[in-house]
Image (tube, rainbow, N blue to C red; front, side, top):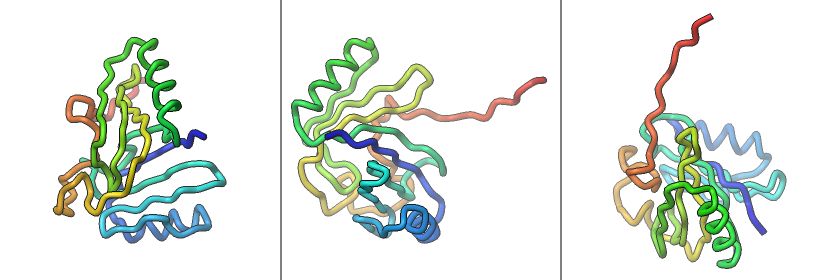
Length: 152
């Protein structure tokens, strides 16, 4: 089974946990002072928020898999798309240890495909809870979004 993964950077973790708990009708399955995650069955999604991004908004999108064969299947698909692929094995990210592959879509949005191996006691393997310790999108992949003015 594959599950869609969305990670959103937020400004106020407490208010955001309250909002998303009401929206999803469920409390987070993981809750930390700087991070929360809902593993929802309806809709089938792994939705995470944290105070770790450079600014509030979409941090990255992903697909979480249960089996190594599913991760390999997606890796092969990404290779066919001829995108620059970053592979990480046994990495610690967002309170979990995972094997994963990262790409950027043609618009520059970071996509993560991963298989969780185990939980981790710290965010990205670091004790710090400072917001500047961003999520685990590889530095070469992290995109800075800019606002463009539309002309009519």
